[in-house]
Length: 291
Image (cartoon, rainbow, N blue to C red; front, side, top):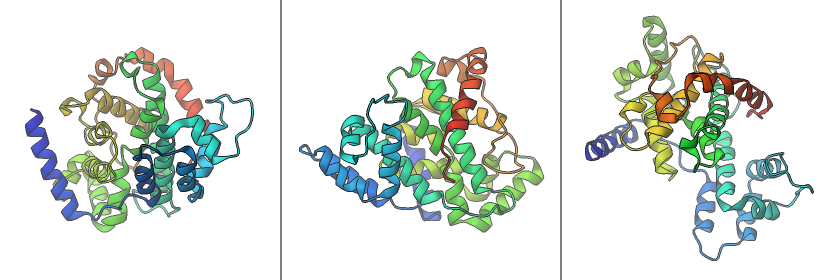
């Protein structure tokens, strides 16, 4: 099963790469990977890289001074912030900031794609994934920020298709709306792959964790995930909650089919999910959107 899935992944990788020109990894992430890969790297070394990117340094100081860390004194030094947060968290903050810098620019709504609505959906799914993961023992070893990033990036393939193949992607959206068929089904028909495949290939190209790349690919079909079904199920559930909350990623399109088996895979029954909804909505309302 794993061997077959790997072969299919290789085919998808080649197909996406030959069709869509995917963005290269942002410079700040490349430099952080290089610096953090050195055994003798210090917080000061990492701070030099972070300080050169205003979006990353601003996000880092905001997070380290948030209630999450509960510090008694305000931190205004990037180097100290990195010491408090650690290298792993620094990379996660840099990734979020880099994604918003690369893809979060203001753009006008075009037919069935509204960039502002897309990012509202992405952030809601990220917040939902973080809250859901924190309430389940299935994810006890996962950092909450990892769940957030998985939710945030699950549909990144859509915005790449919009940026790199806009006419064909918009035609696909119109077809999806007019025929009342799921986007992924029409994408497969028109492109030969789906937005989930595109997002997964981007994650691979950016050297993001393997479980994240796999969860992005299978977030619409977690039962087919041969490797990390719990995480793809979590993202499937978070994505569904975002649509239910009136924050869809595309305009006028069909609500994605829901796989009820994700409740068992995530260790979260429907009653528990409903109980968590007020907290998810509260956290989403308090979140800082890209604009």
